Amino acid sequence: MEKVRVDIENKGYDIKIGEKLLDNISSYISNEYKWMIVTDSNVWSIYGELFERELGGNKPVLYSITPGEEQKNLHTVTEIIKSMLENNFTRGDKIIALGGGVIGDMAGFCAAIFMRGISFVQIPTTLLAQVDSSVGGKTGVNLPEAKNIIGAFHQPELVLIDTSVLKTLPPREVVTGLGEIIKYGLIEDYSFFRYVVSNLNGIISLDQGIMPGIIKRCCEIKAKIVTQDERERGIRKFLNLGHTIAHALETATEYKIYTHGEAVLLGIYYEAKMALKMGLIENAYGEEILRAIKATKINLSLKGFSVSRLIDIMINDKKNKDNRISFILPRGRGRVEEYLLERNIAQSILLDISEV
Ligand SMILES: NC(=O)c1ccc[n+]([C@@H]2O[C@H](COP(=O)([O-])OP(=O)(O)OC[C@H]3O[C@@H](n4cnc5c(N)ncnc54)[C@H](O)[C@@H]3O)[C@@H](O)[C@H]2O)c1
Image (tube, rainbow, N blue to C red; front, side, top):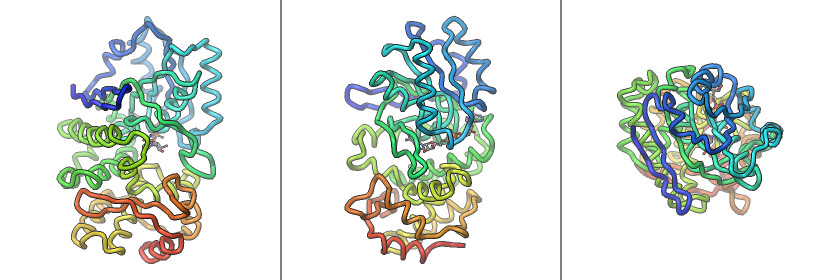
């Protein structure tokens, strides 16, 4: 088993990474507490039996939702919290977030606000959640107007990453995880980016020889960044590479067309094009990024999108300052910086680089 420490003062925790960790789940779930498992019906239909068998003596309360980003809202949060009250949960009890980023964000948010905060464990089951969303303590839900606009920073007490659960992921969800993996290389570690690009097929086929190492490297980079800047006052913003455009695409399509990770792949593609257009990176490096994203074979066309509508959405982005839109853009190999652009400038660059 591999271990990465997130060393945030007074609330540090371990990320444990390995194959078949869930076969030993009872050794991580103390029966001193009452537990609620928040999950979705896809995940529970595959792993519910294992949990019921392994946690037999300490039967957790189950709250299973319909899968999907549309469920990541305040209504679901209220229902989960009502169920905790009905089951007499108190401040000493705990939540397990078992699922992808939707479950992790929402269950984590319930843990952040139930009785002003209780403890929770992240058990991420998608590639995206294992390399990114389960680490760092960002929790929250969407409003129709803006993604992740209601939320809290609330760190888990443990992140348990069982790489064998990836085997049941639909292929689309594997590609979805690639966006965040590529992101880590681009913001912090160019040689990791090269390694990822040259092992793209191995990642897509979930080669167990390379997956634990790739997941661990992403967690190490995220752990390092959030340890230095838990509340996103500085370098944590860099984790938003690709996300200004991604969130606008997701909001414009009401979360129905792209998975979050697909939107991030498009976001990185177009933000790399912005960096090229603005002269922030050499052509050779820019082309290398564009080739990497194209190699994932996702559809990169923005046909049917109104750039001015996308900009309208970006104006509500949480990172913005003084009415200028915040973009995290590549600035060199393995390096990014924040650029704040006036609406009309952002719009004219985007119009120029959009591919239809
Ligand atoms: N908190 C953060 O720092 C952070 C970072 C990145 C993304 N996010 C959030 O993460 C969310 C996206 O997460 P996601 O991509 O994991 O999507 P998701 O949670 O919707 O999961 C994707 C699909 O995979 C299914 N699934 C999950 N695990 C499975 C498994 N092992 N086998 C079979 N099916 C499985 C789910 O049922 C779902 O249908 C977005 O809401 C995004 O905003 C948060």
